[in-house]
Amino acid sequence: MSRDIYLPQMARIEKIIPENPQIKTFVLCFVDEDFNSSFSYEPGQFMMVSVPHCGEAPISFSSTPTRPGNIELSVRLAGKLTGAMHELRLGDLVGLRGPFGTPFTMDKLSDRNLLFVAGGIGLAPLRGVINYCLDKGGYGKITLLYGSRAPDDIAFSADIKLWQKKGIDCQLSVDTAAEGWNGHVGVVTTLLAGLEIENPKSSLLCGPPIMIKFCLPELSKMGFTDKEIITTMERHMKCGIGVCGHCYLDNKLVCVDGPVFDLAQLKAH
Image (cartoon, rainbow, N blue to C red):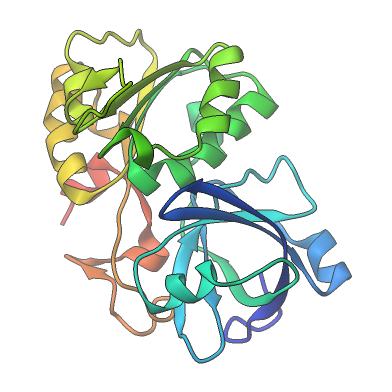
């Protein structure tokens, strides 16, 4: 946690990885070496990222804490802050506050078969979880279903190829095919048809709200209990610490009660 939850720590851009035309992964190190060496976080948490004169926004970790020394934030071009980030170059500085939010409870997922379902930039936080599982070991069979609008929109291609080499069942789908695409065509939920995941199991979801909405009943039909269906929720955040109330969702604040919830928590009012 930063020394002052309201004061950003400056971090330097060490590397920029273009993932697709709209997404870049920024590899960052804190300027303060002592702070950088002591910094820790958990999969599923996020940072409040700021660029001078361009505001502040929450960005989830796409890296894993099992690989210390730097952090990775994958940013989709969507607004003023993200647009400013996409203009940054190596050596430029950004402000970071955090980490904030509840993480995925990785210890409760050990020895379980894991089904990841992601859409678009939603693969970013799950990328950190998958790499955590690979680094730590002790997890069951991992299956990834990943949907994109078109083949050119597929992000984290290098990771997906590496995961496949390490035995992860990666199934990709696009909403609209293009010349040269020989894979599945359709929304990512169509990949669930006929899929079987053996017990004990858990499913982790991250993507557009409409994707999550249609995935939830399908996962229930597949035998996942409400506690075994874990998702992240997106809401507009201003503070990250439960003060401003911008991310209010029913009786919860996404920044402190989430962004990771299981379905049982979401159903509780």
